[in-house]
Length: 537
Image 1 (spheres, rainbow, N blue to C red):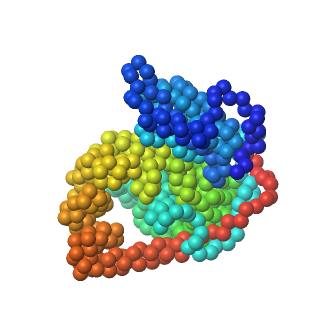
Image 2 (cartoon, helix red, strand yellow; image 1 turned 90 degrees about the horizontal axis):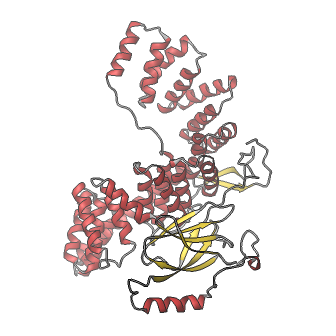
């Protein structure tokens, strides 16, 4: 396989001996069978793996450094033409692997016991300084039509697909302020309106309060009255359009926004019109408006709105492109990184997805959203994800009363241990019990506890946990399937048949629900364009 970036391996002069794959295997065998090092002799560990881009093309000439917890480089090498690397380091403390390459985002991969070999590092490309970030009148893709998306977008198993759909929907809500509750301020605003029922300020203040409280239907009357008094006030007109949209009066909202656009062509109006078109189930029109908003004002909010909507509609690669550009323009945006992680996950790049979400968690460790994203990714991944165990451990430590925090950490540990009997099995069991204590109706924890007991050979206790899981959530299909397996193993075929029938019914219902969602949101047919950029920065 050719190496990207046109690297000539002969131009790379190495200061250390390069190891062939055969020698790597031999050295691994020697190290694994060698006696424990003495306190005076540090253990030598071989670290080996491959570096690729998001399209799984190898990256040659990437600098690979093994660093300690203080960031001091203990060993360094660069990748071969096939993207592989290997280096040796004396282990005396926690290690991490830093991979850098011009034109790509850096990657930092914590190295835990058992994860020193067969490492896979994905580097995300960035634009060079000579290629300033810009949004084209015709970007590198276009939305040319709408079709059913049953076989489009997304990668991996059905569970992974459902997870990516969930992440996509959740990603759009990142950064959305929660609804504010009514308080004494509402009474004061109402009193002011009673004193001046024709007052623009009084009507606008109460209507604005309702919009921010997401009580859109109640906002329409005072904002409409304020609009009658002063139709030229932009803020009131914008909030009235928001109220119409939130209340489901899409035609009135659209007409008002178009009226405002005829007087003042603004990016925030295009974004609001896009929201209206999306709510009206006109996603193609919505994408055009999101694009115009970004062209006029490449703000963090506009980037995120466009990329998030593309992701919901399973236009995954364009979503990655927009999220990547947005993350480069706003590197401190937590939700942009989390959204990029969700898009990469939907495209099958699970390791790179996890790293971006971990980066988001670092920006604001107190925010639960990135951890919840990461936990869902890890739960449905068959392998440990980079940085997931470390970040989810912190999540569980910081929020010991949050059942999801505890549960997701247990799931991260389960990916690094032998089912039911590994070194973390007892800790996983305790964590699941802790999650149940935090929420006695937490069905996923009962289910996983049952699976752990079943794999340990304790079928009777496993059945109890499956039954508790079903009692907490009768629609959890996997719990019925697992219970049916346990009954069949115990020779209770009638009970097993009943559980399998319930499982089949729930699976059909789930499939219908997913299909309904797919038809509702639809899929964009994304056609690559070759036209050059024309828009300014």
